[in-house]
Length: 308
Image (spheres, rainbow, N blue to C red):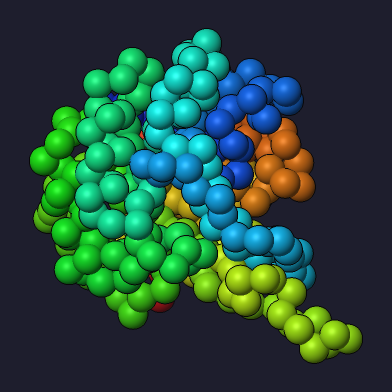
């Protein structure tokens, strides 16, 4: 059997394979490029990028948990102009699509960041972050309601022709409701899920372990929740889905693809092993070879119930 075809496409973004970095876990590329060729990725998703520089939250900002981690970084970044002038030129060196994660305190900020990125060489799409739980204004404030997410996506849609991929929060009653609202407002694809809101307490000092009190829970603990939500949304909308949440191995990635994801993002796993993305790419290829799967696209949404 010839080598399986791992390539996928998301609204015109052609990817060598279905594996992407998750925003905030691979910086702006230089950090991960020390370990592997970024050109081997399906796509590179940047850290959150705002209109003006954001300082983020004071430390401590991360806490290890029994099955993952809590983070309350607060989307620290140097702003969109710094990204365009200082960060993007490095990413242009690699044969990899670049998707910029866009954040804002207000709809106007999202719109302006999107406008500035729209005609910049080397930007292939925008992941609209309406789901980060670690800032007091913007992001999850919008993404927690169908109305809010529709307002942000609809406003951004008016200023760009680039693919728009809202990143959905799991901290809602019904994620299919916000998914439908995003698509109806002009989303081309969906990323899900972002982190679950959680906290941790130090019993010795009787204080919260995070200065922000709460943070976003990621890692293996949230995988079953993320997998269920990807499946539900795949049944509810007809746009490509990018699955995120606790993907540590190729087997995890294949589960998300079977549930309906066209591609996956790898986040917390890279903190355990910076080579995780490459190991997962190779593992998906091996799964396809061993299962005589000629094209990975044939796995998308192929899960079926057990015979009763």
